[in-house]
Image (cartoon, rainbow, N blue to C red; front, side, top):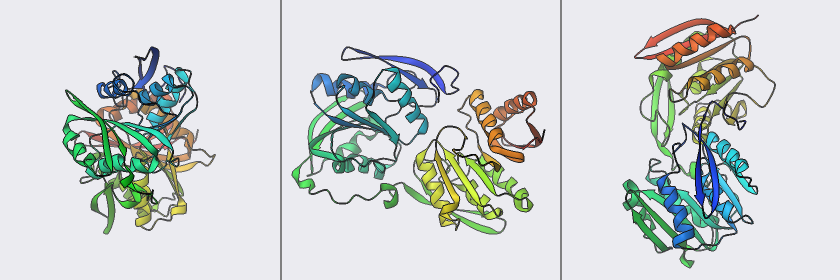
Amino acid sequence: MAMNDTDPYYKKQIPLNYQGKNLVFRTSQVLFSSHDIDVGTKHLLRTLTLENSYEFKKALDLGCGYGPIGIALKSISPDSFVHMVDRDALALDYSQQNMQLNNLNDIKIYGSLGYDNIVDTDFDLIVSNIPAKVGEPVLEHMLLDAGYFLKTKGKVAVVVIEAICDYISGVLNNSSINILFSKKWPGHTVFIYEFTGSFGTKKTRHSDFQLGIYDRGEKTISFNNQKTYIRTAFGIPEYDTLSFETELIIKYLKVLENRLVKKAIVFNPSQGYIPVVLSKSTKIDQISIIDRNLESLMVTKRNLVLNNFSENKISVLHQIGLRQNNSQKVDLVLGTLSEDDNPETHRMLIKQADYELILGGLMIISSGSTAITRIEGFLRSENSFHIQKRERSKRKSILVLEKKYS
């Protein structure tokens, strides 16, 4: 998105003085540690440059957020090459903004679920503020799979919160790992380690997603006397119970059975319930799934394919907002709106849906009732949609909109 204060996700700028470099970071309310640079991140950066001196020519920031670690390291080593990856498209966008804001270049910023989209295997240093709630199989792979991407004697530096410190220590208690440094502060611990010769030659590494380390279980839902199976994953909502917002949309999809729907956008698909039911309740030709969360997109695509929807009919867009990268209009836009997003973000999404829809096309959205009431007020002033239906249930609401012909 454009780097300006009209960005609906923007919260504020926060400073960081690092090794004499005065850095500044744009942050978003919905990204991790938007109020200030995270304490754990500060401990990790201080460890790398003050308590120990680890030189590097090429570094990887795994799970970069809005970019404080990777950008700070690049600022003190301008001739180095830095890669920054994250599953969240908004985090990647803010990392790009912050790279420009701090007048840096030669940073590659791209989406990856863990290491799955990383090709280079010659990093001197891999750094990460390890997330705590991704599940133990994912944590283990984040720590151990680093060995596939390092040069010989390359280093890994991570910071973890106290809740997972014992588990992390157990994983690193491995004959293939040499712990070079560890230090505990209240609430956080930093580990720096390398892989020994016993790590062996680098075998072909398989995708963590394909190996199933994110898998949580299976969920069965019934729709029109059909049973639909969804393979759920860690790190995504609705792994065991559908939200009321999703239930409202699925209930309404019965209305579409006799409506011609050729192309649709489904945003924020979570585990994929809505697009899967859509594929079974209509004769749809093309579904575009859009989300900031790369894992959600991968899980949703897998569930569509598992439910016999052709892979070549699925478009996957890892991005902010609903604008497609083609000129083809759609018949239907549907999805859930996060109550964590502010009203301006919802307004932006409604306007983008208006652009993507054909005349007479439908937009079906659900969210908290307060958010839907605000959207109704906005729509009355815009005059671009007919409000066909609003239904409330358990403090949640669904809104069905038809794009006006004139």
